Structure formats: structure tokens, C-alpha cells
Image 1 (cartoon, rainbow, N blue to C red):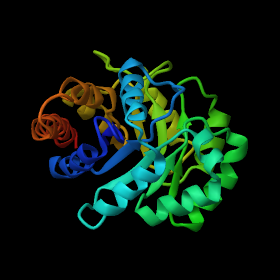
Image 2: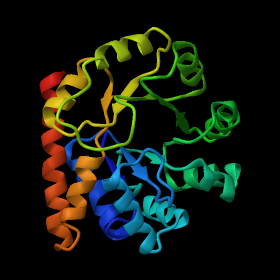
Image 3: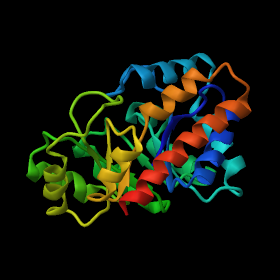
Length: 250
């Protein structure tokens, strides 16, 4: 389950990257909508979002891009977007426009649990899912409440802190997943710090999806001045290697 920032390095390349993700074997892609105030994002994704914002990318342009691609890709597309953007544009209109564009759902990383039920109901009215984040420090009772208002899957943070590549997965990750399994039947997607095929292999033996963001976004940043075809080829090759970890772990 790769993550990319929409509009980095530009929207046309984002479209080519989404098609490449599908070709590489990804099942779902998180599409990050750029936001000026980081929400648990490490320096790599912060820089990526800054580049997209500097380029003038706005949600309506992202929706237009997805609409133009939807007939060619079957890849699940889930928007990772700050709820402050949604609130400013209007919950109902934002979700309506996202559904019309062809998005499949949302991750709202800063949506208060107390407001999540209403947002989830609006999403469901349009046939979309809403996934909430659960951290390693979330008490079991609250984790159950978060899972109850989620649909599609729950997003389990492998570690506290910010996004970024790590050498090893947390030793207590199997226990975290097991605790969450006891309070929800939803699929569990694990993110934060997953960056290598062997990480993917380890994660999918216990959960339902491995989310990789910073490692992909870093490669996009490193190749952003190359010809688009080379950038896309490099990312497709890397994602294909991650999918190889998935095959090895299933």
C-alpha cells in the first residue's frame, strides 16, 4: 500500500506514478493531499508536500486528475488528507466531489474521534470508506472505539512519533497487531517505518497490508529533476521490489 504526495513533482507525473504503482502490483495507494502543517509527517514527506504546495496544487486539481485516470486504473485510491482542509471546503461537498472523481475513501489523520461518526456516515452515503489511525499508545478501549467508527480498514501505526524510514520494525509490533485483532474484524494496515521488502514480508504475515511512504517519496524527491520516465521507472522498480516482499510473506 504505497503512499505518494499528489503533485510532487507535478500532477502529470503523479498520474503516471499511480499507473506505475498498479503495474508494480500494489493493491491500494494512499494519495496525500498537500497540507502546510505536518501531522506526524517526517522531513521527507514534509518536503514533498511543500513542493506540491509551491507548485500550486489544490484538492480540486487532484480530483480532476483522479477522474481522468479512473477508467484506466483499478488500483484502490484512498486520500490521506487533513480534516482542516475538509472542514474548510465543507464535509459534504468534499466527500461528494471525491466520490465523483473516483476516490474509494479517506484517511483523516487529525479527525477527532468525537467527530468521526458524522464524517463516516457522510462517506458511507457515497459508498466510500473512512479509516482512522491507532497508535501504539492508544488504550485498548479507545482503540476499539476508533475501529468501530472506521470502515474498510484500520491504520495501525507501527511506532509513535513521525513518519520515516527505519532499519528495523518495533519488537512489540506482533503484540500490537494481536491486541487490535481482539477488538475489530476490520483488516489492519500497518504503517510508519516500513521501507524494505523484508519489512513488508514481516508485516503481512501478521496484518493485512503494509503501508510504505517515506521510502517511496524519498526516491521521488531524489529523481524529481530527471526525465519523468526515469523517475517513474525508478519508483515502479522499487515498489515492485516491495511487492516481492509481500509475495514472500504470504
